[in-house]
Amino acid sequence: MLRSLYSGISGLRAHQTMLDVTGNNIANVNTTGFKGSSTQFQDTLSQLTQGASGPQGLTGGTNPAQIGLGVRVAGVTTSFTQGSAQTTGKATDMMISGDGFFVTNKGGQQYFTRAGSFGLDASGHLVGPDGGILQGWLGDASGRVNTGGPTTDLLLTPTTTMPARATTSVSVSGNLPSDAAAGTSLQRDIQVYDASGVARSLSMTFTRTAAGWNVSAADASGATGTGSLTFVDGKQSTPGSVTVGGISVDLGAVSGYAGSATVAATGQDGYKAGNLEAFSLGADGSLVGAFSNGVRQTVGRVALARFTNPEGLEKAGDSSYSSTANSGGPQIGQAGDAGFGSLVGGALEMSNVDLSQEFTNLIVAQRGFQANARIITTSDQVLQELVDLKR
Image (cartoon, rainbow, N blue to C red; front, side, top):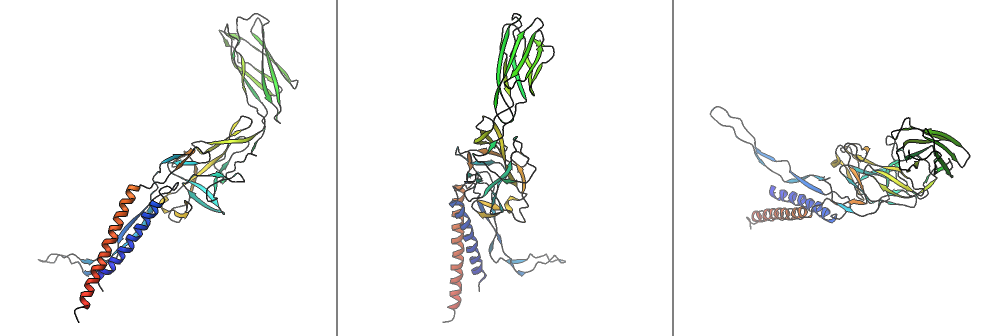
């Protein structure tokens, strides 16, 4: 049988595969996080009809004569170039700008994806459209996240409660007028909290003396404290403070210039208990929760994975990948670390398929298929001529 016949058949198969790959790319042009693939061909084993010989005496060397036996698909590789961003405004939508993959857990199996279209299920887990639970690290009661520990399911529910925190420090700033008459009194109040989140008022009274200002403080629980402030050219000679029932009142930022009485309590570190109302995503993957007590605190952080050879990942369906022996194991980290991209909230990464290139590939594959079909037709005609030699 003619070798060209089988070469043509191999060409049909190879170009059919190229058509399949190109068609799949075009079909997924609007698939979130999809990464396009390309087909590589290589020739098959060639038949040696004449071996090579080296030069001998006055005779030159000859080259080998080989006849190729067709083509085959060497591989189908995935391009992980960045796709364009599409803003959605949805808080649970996330996009990786740079390298890395989201880590999900589905049925106890770990998967990796670039599709960041997550949402909340009935249990408060961040899940993808296929039900895979987004992995990361949860924050503790104080908002600290241990990114060195194992990853876990990210959970965000309205019942997530921030415990109350007792006030331990109060900051005061502003100015006490140095030209005020002796005996002038200024009172400032601030709301503080105990360990159970019960609010009470802390009152501070500033009284002008010949040497400076006396400070007395008292809170609703009956605790009191006193101190004094002296100024040189409007600046405190020694930074002052007052302690009231375990609360340290920092007066170091108070000045003593003439003509202005702007002294005021500017802040305290306590708060009542609160429930999670909303959250936002930071560029480092931090999930910052907004609680009903007005406090914003980190409730978790999204984990990312990277691979030594991402092209070695195996497509597992649902826009997800699984690791293989040639991809290497996942290296878990957080957005912004070396080798990892940053995260963008309220946006999705679209497919990186270039339609103009894919339609060009479609034409190339079609013409390649037609040319190989012509080889088979021509080979068939030659065989017919051989059969017709004897009639």
